[in-house]
Length: 227
Image 1 (cartoon, one colour):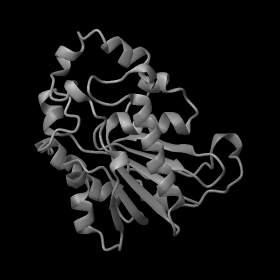
Image 2: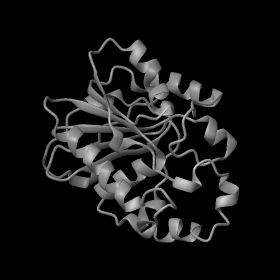
Image 3: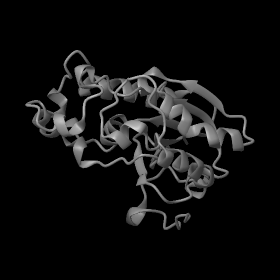
Image 4: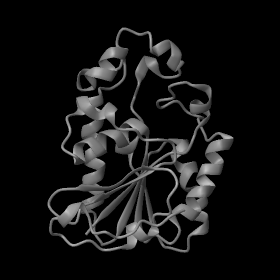
């Protein structure tokens, strides 16, 4: 059994300024994001984690730092380039209010699989590399749960692929800063146990076992831990 805990980086300086940061350097956490990162210490609690795979972006590394300082676990940390933010190319650093008026914005919203950012990358290519990171995490040696720390669009694409959704539908998924989503890979196909949770303590969910058989009645009936 492998559980993948997807964490979006906490609220960043770019979020506060309303810009599309992309892979710009020097984008760290806002004051709100720093508080969210500290809050993750309690929310993750004593969740048993065998490995952390992190986007190389500064805001992702800063999000996990408080928990890594507090935990006594020997958790292997890996920088995974495939979890990096979308390369938005010429859109990087632009105000979202100006991008809303761009002729390609409709493509981003309605046909993201066809979107290729000027001098950047395509969203379909991003999803492929994101799923490579998930596959590496699931198939890496050893048992236990893995944390993947990444970005909103990247996590949305992972959730969409796990649910069997076409990439053109991934804008229906919302992934907030510092939110936690949990995927379970105890069977042949992944399934979503938690989505875009910004409040709960998740140690009970992560540490609990689930049978490999299909869940009758929609779920096990196990109560969710509350934060």
